[in-house]
Image (cartoon, rainbow, N blue to C red):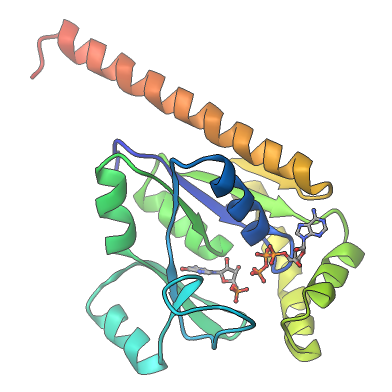
Length: 206
Ligand SMILES: Nc1ncnc2c1ncn2[C@@H]1O[C@H](COP(=O)(O)OP(=O)(O)OP(=O)(O)O)[C@@H](O)[C@H]1O
Ligand SMILES: Nc1nc2c(ncn2[C@@H]2O[C@H](COP(=O)(O)O)[C@@H](O)[C@H]2O)c(=O)[nH]1
């Protein structure tokens, strides 16, 4: 699918810093809109229904799957997470730039549908730092942290499927990299759309 707005998809192993980076990007760039996912995971810390996620029961999630309401959904760290079609298709069709924070399975599925989507993978500088960020965040039990670190190895192996990889060592540097990727892609897509429109005009194709 090709739409007037741009779709950016950010994935990372848990604790690499993608939510922090996306939040910082949105503070610098008012054109970027977040998409709130649905999940069966219980809220953690100060999370609020409708802000970080729509928190659903397994039955409610099943209902959305049966109604084909998800653009993509996946099992991640023992819970289900999904991106609603409604949240994306309508907004991108109307020219909005939307950013998704989802896992690598979701990112690859989104790219199959939105072939112009830009996939960005965030890596931590080291295993030690990844562990220490999860511990410092202080929102997950030791058991959950171990599960997320165990899953991180296979997630990181997917980085090569992505269009861009950012190493989030120095936070400000990583925000700059993310901002630069978004800006460069907007320019590229705008130029492609102009070139296509010019070709259609030249060929008198309505
Ligand atoms: N460059 C950085 N240097 C040091 N700490 C960082 C950096 N980036 C993020 N952090 C911290 O690491 C922790 C994890 O970051 P964050 O919650 O953004 O990760 P995440 O990838 O979104 O994780 P999850 O997928 O579990 O939600 C947070 O406490 C955050 O403040
Ligand atoms: N495939 C999808 N993955 C998603 C979605 N929303 C979030 N996620 C990913 O799940 C893990 C865990 O998130 P957490 O908030 O429990 O730490 C993380 O990788 C998210 O990016 C989604 O809609 N689809």
